[in-house]
Amino acid sequence: MSFKTTIAAALAATALAFPAFAQDITVNDPYARSSAMMATSGAAFMTITNNSGTDDRLIAAASPVSEKVELHTHKQDENGVMRMIHVEEGLPIAAGETLMLERGGNHIMFLGIEAPFEQGATVPLTLTFETAGEISVEVPVDLER
Image 1 (cartoon, helix red, strand yellow):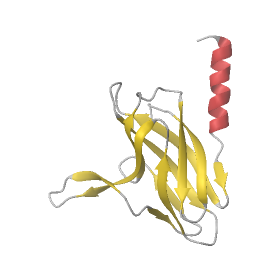
Image 2 (cartoon, one colour; image 1 turned 90 degrees about the vertical axis):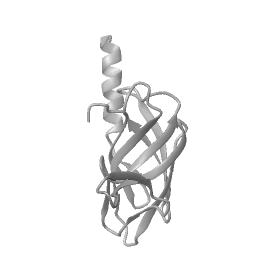
Image 3 (spheres, one colour; image 1 turned 120 degrees about the horizontal axis):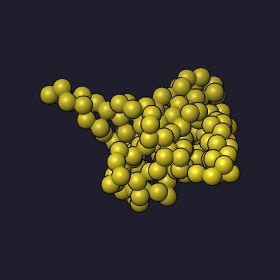
């Protein structure tokens, strides 16, 4: 990679590190990853803080990089096996609280991705909240986290 390319990549990564805001919702530390070069799915993780005095709910997510985007969580079944499930009712965020989207817990799932996520790329993502509305986030791909 040339010096100019390295500097441009560093500046882009720094710019993406700043939080996204919409009304009283703050999105911090977003990152995305796919599991392998031939992967058809990927996931995004972040923290979402509700700075308002009113409860809200993350009800949907969308991205042009995949056929479908769903809100997911992991739950243990009756046999003790952890299963990933679609959370159709959305993910609540109480007033003044933070929702952690993390590996092994709540997360955003990209199903039918057009191409595997590449280290250093960004994934456009629109989060939809019941009260706050839509927030657009450029999610950096970090395959090393």
